[in-house]
Amino acid sequence: MSQHAGVRLLVNPAAGRGRALRRLDAARHALAHAGPFDVVTTRAAGDEARLASDAVRDGVHTLVVLGGDGTVSRVASSLIHTNTALAILGAGTGNDLAKSLGAPVFDYAAMAERVAARNPRRIDVGEIDGRVFVNAVGIGFDVAVLQRTARARWLRGDLLYAVTALGQLFRYRGLAAQLSTTKPLADPGVTTNSSVRSGPPATTQWLMIVVANGQWFGGAFRIAPDAQLADGLLDLVAISDTRSWRRAILFSRAPWGAHIHAPEVLHVQQSEVRLTCDTPPMYEADGELYRATETALTVRSLPRALLVIT
Image (cartoon, rainbow, N blue to C red; front, top):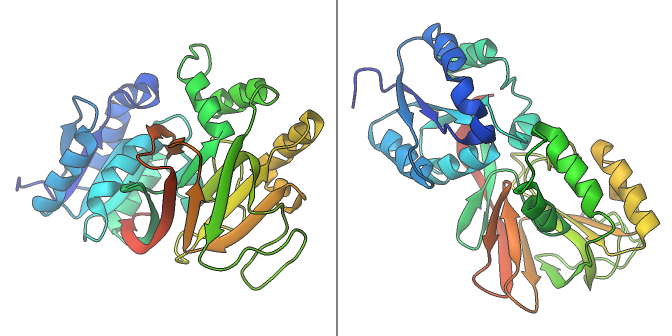
């Protein structure tokens, strides 16, 4: 362990399409006021998890990540159930976890003060297909949007997802999937102790299915307004396929979380959700795209598994 390994800055130069690299000097300057630290930099895809494991091995008590949700997610996979705390300096596209945490991740000086104080809290993470996520996973419409954003060149930040989603809103054909949970799903329009608000049957054609640990999604959408990061539960928000004009209404309500009470929306808080599709689906976890290994996917909460600086 180096003499400065109490705090370590992990930088993903590619995060936010190069934004992290452009903000590295500002991050260094802010952290210098919090005490000694060292710096490690990713050089290839997948380096984040390895470098985070190295930090745990070296006895680092706070690993500061300069990057976005994808970088944070890959780092977190190596920090769960350890005593190394995660701190975020925002430099990505969406930064959804930071919104749910309420951490001032774009105010590097304020985050440096919190790193120096080191008063972390434990939050839940989720797991799907053997992969850890910190904020949300989704299948359906949002996968189509992310595939499209990967080809976009003229937009950045929260606006990128929102504009691309609007462009795909009337093109996406829907996804057939069956849902099941650890508690029975209620009939449409019935509110029960299992937190079901309302919604369509559990087997249907869906516009999108999101299983959320945090409240925010896609940078600008409060997809699960009731979600709490440390309650041991995940919020299933499943939107059934519907006519174009209803899609537009739901889309317009989502930034404020007002979509959640619409009749097309099934919302339930559970510790585990199971999804079954005809073929292994594409899914996104914290903004990164993956192909499932099986037709049936289980999404589960790992309660209080991650230390974070907020």
